[in-house]
Amino acid sequence: MNSFNPNYFIHAANVLLVVAYSVRDILWLRLFAVAASLISIPYFVLQPTMLWAPLSWSVVFAAINSLQSWRLFIERRPVKLTPEEEDIRRLVFRDLPPRKVLQVLSIGSWITLEVGERLIESGKRPETVSLIVRGKVRVTRDGRVLGELIAGDVVGSALILSGIPAEVDAVVVEPGRAMRWQFGALERYLAANPETRTIMLQHAARDLAEKVERVTGADRNRSDKTQ
Image 1 (cartoon, rainbow, N blue to C red):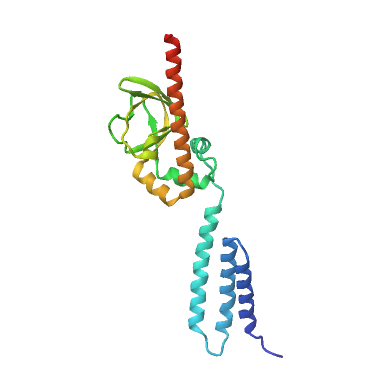
Image 2: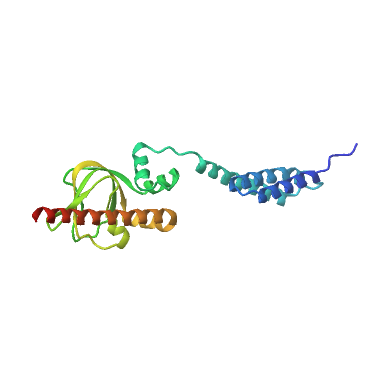
């Protein structure tokens, strides 16, 4: 009876590599690569003289691809957002997957808005940007009320777009909750994540335009009443 030919192992391993390079999904590619590395091991062991160098490299490749496969699997697991996190996704990041939303929230911090708390002071460059989730913030300039910010509004949207110092005061008039980011940390994160940056800038631009519309609308109403 003929002994088993170890060449079958290396042939099977190479077939799996061909399959790995044919799939589009990176997770399946890595899983097939792990299988190919493991199946090739008996070929190196069953040689008249064990081939330690290729055997060692097969183990290394199997370990690396196993680790990366596990990381991809963890990243693809469904993510459940808390009600507050879901509110932020609905208000700003509805086009981002939940895991990306958690990433951008992880560099910020939740704050409780207390009545009388000043979020922006005129003449000073804000160090933070806050997204209102609940509550109300009044914006004034030289003592004149320009309008009020509500859920979905960004306190410091002009800072995101231009980086210029604030020309208004923003004071909490109704308690609530907000997500606050340090501007430097947010800027670094957005620079490394173009998709999130685009969505954030689009929201900031819409937010600023809506604020201007509210202010001009309020001015028109006041002028109509005085006539």
